[in-house]
Structure formats: C-alpha cells, structure tokens
Amino acid sequence: DQQVKQNSPSLSVQEGRISILNCDYTNSMFDYFLWYKKYPAEGPTFLISISSIKDKNEDGRFTVFLNKSAKHLSLHIVPSQPGDSAVYFCAASALYGGTSYGKLTFGQGTILTVHP
Amino acid sequence: DSGVTQTPKHLITATGQRVTLRCSPRSGDLSVYWYQQSLDQGLQFLIQYYNGEERAKGNILERFSAQQFPDLHSELNLSSLELGDSALYFCASSGAGGHINEQFFGPGTRLTVL
Image 1 (spheres, rainbow over the protein chains, first blue to last red):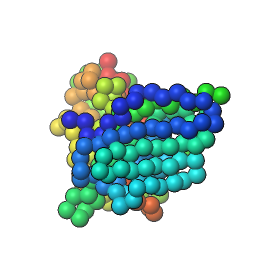
Image 2 (cartoon, chains in turn purple, brown):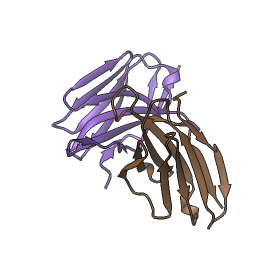
Image 3 (cartoon, each protein chain N blue to C red):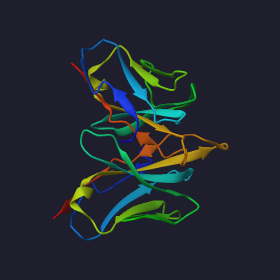
C-alpha cells in the first residue's frame, strides 16, 4: 500500500524554465509534507516543507503547493538550473494522538534532468 | 554537509553474519531515525529513537535491532543477514531548531551481502 506516490519517474526541462514535480498521497492523517533532493552516493538533502494548515510555502527558487482536497502537492523550481539535476523525493508525516511521530513516508522519487 | 555522520560507508559481508552500523546525529538533535533504501522498495522507515528511547517502529525485521546511547549516537544491528538485506541504510536526525519532522540525513552505509 503506497501512501505517497510520485507518478512521474523522470522529468526533463531546459535550463531557465520551470520544473514542476508532483506528488499524491492517500492518507488523510498526513499533516506535514517535505521535499528532499538526492544525488547519487549521498543522503537525501532537505529542501522545503509545508504544513497542512498552509497551501503554499516559498524559499528562493523553490515553492511547494499543497491541495488538501485533492491530496496533492507539487514542487516548483524556477528558474531551473543544471545543478538541480537529481532525484527528488516527496515525503509525508502524520500526527498521532498529540505526539508528533517522526516517521516519514516517502514517494518513489522523480529523476529531474535540467539541460543547459 | 548535513552534520549527520555514518560509519562505515561501505560494508561487504556474507549471509548469516551480523553487522553494526553507526550514526552520530547533528549537534543538539535528540531524535534519530533509521531508513532502508533498496532498489525495489524506495526509502522505508525502520525505527526512531528519541533521547535514548524507542519512539516509533516501522517495517523493521526482528533480525534487526537498534539503540540510542546516552551521548545520542545510535547503532543499527543487523543479524542473520540475507541477500535481500543488501541496501543503503540511512540515518537521519531532527530536533535542534526547525520542525521535528524536518529530518537531516547522513551519507548512508551501503551494505552488500554476498
């Protein structure tokens, strides 16, 4: 049962254009969402996050949008740069009984390639 | 550099053996998490410790165990190893500032079971 899904295994964009990575989830208990970037042979690097009480969070070139009714989130990178080429994972966590458990549930990842 | 360190970087062993993976969290972080990344399963949560106590458990096999020590470093013990245990094992930590769920990952330990 995959509770977090990234349906696009790969995405290719031109340098300077917008990259949009998508993520869907099924568990309505999820209340915090994160995006991580991962290079080969390295651990995931935290990029940006959003709480379920918001619908948008922006940090420099990165913006995450959350649509709770559709159980969908997306990461926008503008403008895209060749150095952004990596695997991007979305992750979600849930609050149980007032105690925040840290378990992150990850999607399968999307390989982003930004061409010069 | 996330501030999370993991040793060793690579580990090659045989089926039936036991190994220990070590993790040092970022300074000030009280929570440590272990994840397994295999080719067909993606990143899977194994277990979380908070200030020395087990906080949450995921799909961790009974052959696997973990602990967090008073100095907050953590060890993941894998025993009776099988070929299918070959994977990348990541440690993450959180807590010092920021949201509790903003986890910072170490570089991982690549385990190969032959």
